[in-house]
Image (cartoon, rainbow, N blue to C red; front, side):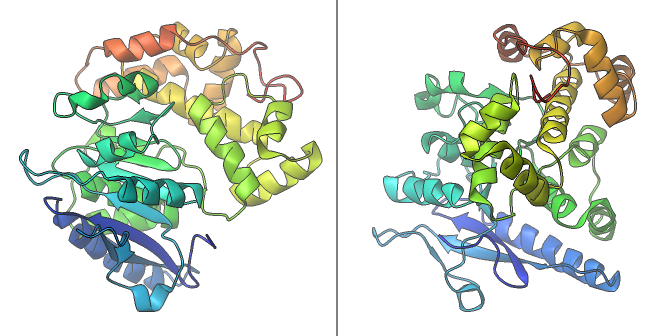
Length: 357
């Protein structure tokens, strides 16, 4: 597969299938139209967001683009969105043609996004292992119960796990659209779109919209491999040597290309990734000591200093801030179990020579 973005466009490809939610493409297209106009009014360099439709055919001819094909040729989408089902009786096609197509495009660099039952499609494609996700509802998909131990379920409606976005709720596509716009254009454009379309954003969603997001659409395959490994492991115990091994690069080459691709040095990337994970766990009600240990810091003072530098408040103050903004909800047993199963990094602290974060 060639580049992720076509010249002048960022493509968001929405997968359409019998029984799937038909509103996804229209909602995202409306938001993209407003965002493109706002960005143009601000006279800033940008690539237009183009929402396209991809059909899962009844025949075995393969998933194909039915809107925008003349403008995009053979370029693969920067984002692939898989909607949920309209009703509980609808049947989602999860044959190997669709699953292979998703795997191939994910390997090619596409960011994956799914809502509600669409998350189950990514699960069947084997793309959720080691990731934090919103959904799927296992009571509707009992066949995924055995596989569910490989991912971390979240109570949050919107979960941005780097190159994997999962969302739930009645305004799923609006919130997902805002998160994409925040990543592509920044907070100013995303906020303007929310205002113009009268989208009310709850405080927990607002926190998720403003959370650290990594750049995956840079076209460097070796750096992309390293990023995906770091997100799968939450950068626990990552060292410069281990990152180099995954990427297949020498240390100096890795650091130069990683900075160019992501805007961050490997140590900074790992630190922000760990702090973002800590924010998620604190938001879910986990204790500070448990969170510090769970994201790889045996030395709580080192964790506190890093959290304060990146977030602007201590973990304790952040937890109080979150608690004051919404009702307290108990920590999911699955989340507590995932924390207890994590070992701290072999070497606490933030020295790159020994631990990347």
